[in-house]
Image (cartoon, rainbow, N blue to C red; front, side, top):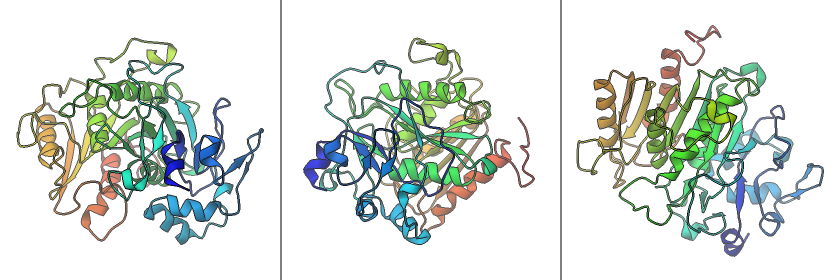
Length: 377
C-alpha cells in the first residue's frame, strides 16, 4: 500500500475482530473486513461480491498485519488465526439519517493519515470525518451483560486514534460481555474553532449516539439504564461533556430517536483534556458544569503525562468538582504511563486500570457480579 493510496482514500471502517459473533448488520450498511473504502484504496486488501460475501485475497493477512497496530498484530499471532475474514465484523450504523447536523466548512475526503503524517506511529489515525458512525461490537450471547459503552477515541479534535483508543477498547469490552460501540465523530476542527477550546460539533454526535443506542436497546439486547460513555484524551473530554450536558440538548430533535434521553448512566474518562481554564490552573473551564442527575464517573491518568493540554491536574480537578457536587466518582493516578496508554498491555501498573474499571462497574451496580446477576437496576 502506497502513501498516496492512503492519503487519497475515504475510510468507512478500520477494525479487526477476534471472535465470531451473531450477524446483526443493517441492511443499508455493507459488510466488510479490515479496511473499507473506495475501490482504489481497498483493492488488494479485500474483494466483496454484490451479495455481501467477502473473498479475501491470499495476501490479506500479511497486509493487515503490516497496517494494524502492534497490539492487534500480536493478538493475531498469539491466537494463530488462519483466516481473519471468517470472523464477523462490527455492525456499522450512521449517526445522522442524512446530512450531519450542525456541520460546516469543507474538509475534503475522509482518510487515514500516512505514517509520516501521523501524530504518533503507534496508532491508525483517521481524519476528515464528515459522516459520523457507530461501530457496534456485540458480545457473544452467552456472555452478554446487557451493558453498553460508547467509546470516543482521542486526537485533539483533529484526528481519531481509531485502533488504539477505539476498536481495541471495544474488543476489550466485548471480551467481558459489554457491547463496545466506537463513535467515529466529526474531525478535524472546522473553520472558526480555535485550538484552546474544544470543538463543539462532536458533542452533537455523542448526544445522538447515546439516543441511538438507547433506541435500539431491545434489538441489541442492552439494558437502556446501563449505557455508558468512555473517552480518551480529547475523547475523554467529549465523554465528560456528554455526561454533564444531557439536560441541554445540543441540537433540535430530528425524529423518534431524539425522543430518547441523551443522558449516559455513567462515564469513564482516560487522560482527558480541556477541563481547566488553563493547563496550569486549578479552575474548571466555564463550559464544564455538573447538573443534578449526572451519573457516576471513573477517571484515570498518569502522573508523568506531559501532553500540554492534558496534565493529570485535569482529572484531579474534575474528581474534586464531582465530589463537591455529590456525584459518585473514582480517580486513579498512576506514577508512569505518559499520555495515550489506552488499554494495551505493558509491564507498568497503569496497564491494570481496565481491571480496576471493571471492578468499579461492578461496585456501582452496572456490571454483573460473579453470580451473574446485577446488583441493582
